[in-house]
Length: 437
Image (cartoon, rainbow, N blue to C red):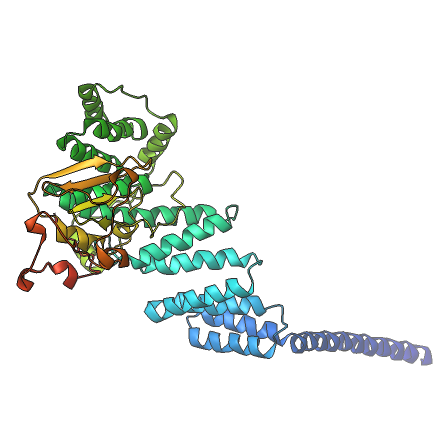
């Protein structure tokens, strides 16, 4: 009997020890979790801010991230917190949000230039401007800023994992910029204002060869030189169509022009042939014809569906120093890079002031070694050195970038003494709105 009692007592004692052991282990685990949480408060703040951003609580997220940055300056989450502040502004959007996002991303690159996230911040600067781009016939400042940011990215981080995405974004931006120049050039081309048209077309074909209408721009340049009786220069642009745009519907007509001028017809460039073939095989989104008028009214951004999908975009920034200048004789010299006209500067006003539709113009090539054109009026002559590709500025107005009026001109039509007949280009300086055509 006593033996049975001892057995039951031992069994009960063993059960109590087992329960005590389990309870002790559970208490130790909770203690460890509590200790881990209290020792990493910066991580708790960061995780809370990330959750707020995911749920569109941007103000609360920025407050939490700023608390982390100010309270734990040596935290391993400091860089991520600063990048999170920029991302919160970017995701919030709107003019204030995008403006502040650019400043925050630039600060991140300044403080952490060697982190891998610096390339992401540079791409986001470009994307901020990308989302604020206007249509081709409107203000182009955001498009120019986006182009510059993406070019900087590709020059600084050519081997990044985001390179392919940035290249495509840059092709989209350059399509918009080229389209804006093409519309202005086409407007003048239809009215035979060859100087204004050729200036923009030369810049366009040299700077944006991947533009969807680059073959057409080359054809227009050839036509301008042809009707000004400079077939040797026209042949160069027709040759470019045959060589660099062999699958263009204008290629056969360009070959006929070359045969007519007695210029050898070149063989298509294999690289250009392969690129155009890939472009034709690329599937592109198509808009609904019925909804297109409604979409045009609602959507403020540009349509980039026709942007190139293959080929290296232009990485050279615009040369703002090489601008259009007027000479006292009513002449205009256009260098190889017409920076002011491409950037929406005051060159447009200068063209309108000195060129009258219907007047005879002469387009002659520049002999400075760079691709260029010198346009002179029928009664005017260049006062500058036309063979050097430069022209003497007409006072301070031409060199300062304002809409310039020549000091003297042999063309009475270019002199406007009546203030009522003053060109509206000065009154509308900076406006890029283009009339429909």
